[in-house]
Every structure is written in structure tokens, then in C-alpha cells.
Image 1 (cartoon, helix red, strand yellow):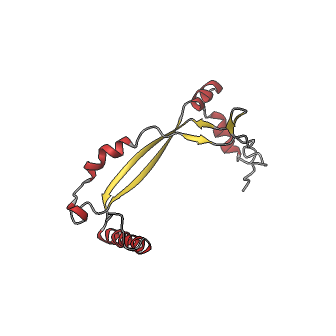
Image 2 (tube, helix red, strand yellow):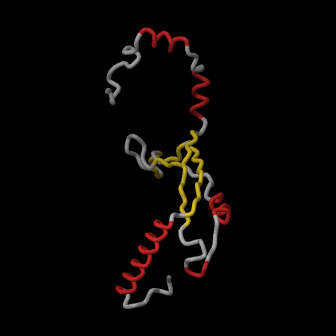
Image 3 (spheres, helix red, strand yellow):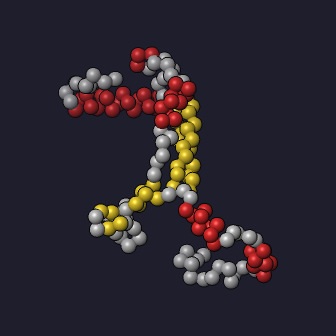
Length: 146
């Protein structure tokens, strides 16, 4: 292990591996710089569990994953990664240029499923406990909630 890259990793390769890497064309310097100038793409999968939308909850609301699709699609807007300080510790502002947006494009994939009965029961129990605790602290007023 060499986490600080003190040793030359190429020098540690076998002759066979060195020969392989000598023959592999990884592109010209201009091609590599052009590739680095493009935004990196990062994929994120978001698991969404629908709890309480089977018509058995408050007000009998029934919603499916298709009903949520327009809202989830709206969330797919460009999300930029930001640097708040540069490697020298400079923050953004009039005298510093440390803070900036990174060239990373995040693509979200939503996997929507109905929650299991067990999870739905656990969420329902937690919500009821939270409402009861708040009601008790507020002297019985639930604020018109659940």
C-alpha cells in the first residue's frame, strides 16, 4: 500500500505489464485535455418507497409510481457540485477565487416501489408517536395535522 504515492508504481510493474502498457494507445495529450474539459457524469440511484398511498391512510389517497413521475422528472434538473474552498484554503468572495462550480453532471435514476406492509406500519407508528409527543408538549394541540 502506498497511499501517498511515494513509490513509482510503473517501476514496480512486471516486464510483461510494462510491455502491455507501452503498446496501449491512451490518446494524445490534446485528446486527454479535451476529455478533461468535458463534464464528468455521475449517476445516482434514488430509492423511493411509497408509504400510505394505497387508500388506507388519511383521506384515502391512492397514488402510484406513475402519479409521482412528473415530480421526480422535475428533480432531474442540473445539480452542480460546488467547491467551497480551494486546496489552499481560500474561500470564495471578492478577494478569493477558491469557491467554484465543478464540471460534474449528476444524472438521477428513481426507483419507485410501494413500501412493504412492515415498513408502512413502522412509518405509521413513528408518525403517530411524533404527533402524540408534539401534542403532549403543546398541551393537546396537534396544529391541525394528522
